[in-house]
Each structure stands twice: as structure tokens, then as C-alpha cells.
Length: 160
Image 1 (cartoon, rainbow, N blue to C red):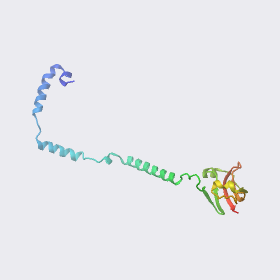
Image 2 (tube, rainbow, N blue to C red; image 1 turned 180 degrees about the vertical axis):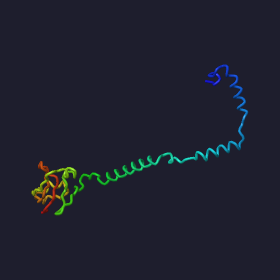
Image 3 (cartoon, rainbow, N blue to C red; image 1 turned 180 degrees about the horizontal axis):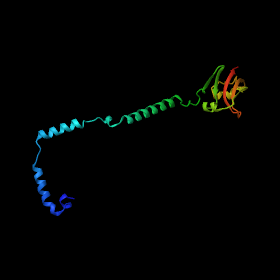
Image 4 (cartoon, helix red, strand yellow; image 1 turned 60 degrees about the horizontal axis):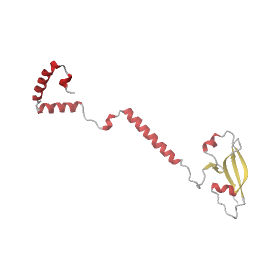
């Protein structure tokens, strides 16, 4: 839509005369350069990172640190490969082999230690070597048992 058509028809002729007169006017080049220099000093050009406030930078840095820490923790607690040795829990008189997760063991209110003879073939899944010669043998072990009777961890006492 043309400006002349939107305006009052009585103003169309004076606006056209004003428009023609303004097209003949040009600012001197020195004035334009002075205006551009004054604008540049009052509004200096800013780099992209100046657009963020210090609070936004802190939130971004904190989020990045949190993501990096989470990624580090996930790589440190990677699940073991099938066939890898089970997790060991250090104790004074030997190492317990965790049969349940550490969280489950820590949540147990009344754990007990029981002695048992465990068939060597049952320990093959935990990484104990089994051969045809010793497959029928049993191994003396201590088991950490929860209040419900479920085994939580196992410690081998003697290997024949």
C-alpha cells in the first residue's frame, strides 16, 4: 500500500512536494563521518560473549561442571563385562565378593556372617576356576546374609 493512498487525499500533494524536496538534500560527508564516530564511541561494538550477564556465565559454568562430573562418575562406575571378576568389598580378614549391589548391602539393618561349604561349580560364575578334577570339591566360605536370609556377599576362607 502506498503512503499517498493511506493518507488523507488533502495531504497527498503537500507530502509529495516535501518528499521531492528531501531527496534533493544530502548531508555533507564530514557530518556523516562525525555522526558515525560519535555513535561508535557511545555504543561500542561488543563481542558475542559480552551479551551474557555474569549470572548467566555462572549458570553455564555450573551446568558444564555438573555434566562433566556426572560423565566422570558414570565412566568410573561402568558396569562390568559379562565374565569379568565380580566387585570386591575390602574387609580386615579378606575380601568379600559382592553378590548384591553396594546400596542393597548398606541398607541391610541386621546382616549376619555364616560359614558354609559351597560347591566349586557354584563359584564358577564368580570367576573361580573349575576343572573336571576339582568340580566335585567344595570350598569353605563365609557368607554375609541379610535379615531375610538372602546372601549379600561371599568371602572364600579356604581353597582346596
